[in-house]
Image (cartoon, rainbow, N blue to C red; front, top):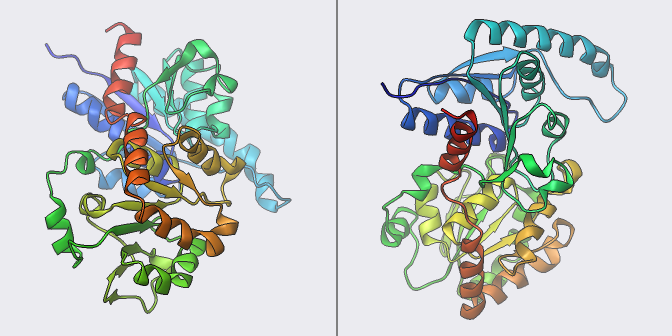
Length: 362
């Protein structure tokens, strides 16, 4: 009989937590098709929509984070924690998981804490080079912590750490599309270097403003752009004569195929995808994330000559020149490509599942 597992996967709040969670679930189902997998998320957060869309059942907990400023919302936090712990206990008793996986986010805390108290093996996956508070709080409750960056023993017990990388979208990695298809799809020219700009689904204001301020210089340099502005910054944008602007790129596999250089925020999943694909990248880390973890993510590559970094506060003044300089330097592009792909771990989901199964001894 094939092996099968009952698994609870918890966490969410952002795509950076949700997509790795789905990738892990899909890998478990691929290896052990008879397994039963359910998710636990925070009510009102995006996982409550994204997880069912991926074909999995999800339970919602009444939980949120501690606000960093004085606010009445903090008064309800103790009640939310108690409610979430009680409901987690109920979910675990009813579902009877063989193990749980926490990927970070509010719901991961109570579910995995309660699982550890009930004798259920707990495993964590940390996407960033600077871990979130939930995973740091759970470090004593877990058996293994799957990470994507070196030096994580600053935060977690060394004996529990396993270097697996971050699970990335397999449809992008496995795409058989060609550069020619991508150029046709985005109405781009074959004889020009293409710069892909991605600031996330909502967009990155500073990056967009920096590109807008340097359009004339980049056009003179013979560059063409594939510019994802994000939904918040797309008003009035459309196709222009030397590139394409769009609110959202649906075919990211094609976008990566045509990109000679990428400008990107430095979220954990973006860093992992660009590393696995070997793309020459200029990171513009968002300054609006906890503990400035995007800068730490980017610097882990910059310090190995695998990427360039432009500070958000300096983007308007420096990003345009950096892009033009890089695009015109074939040798530097080649170096960045060869160094970043060395850091890519494209089979992270498979590694995570294998580590868990091996640890369980089944």
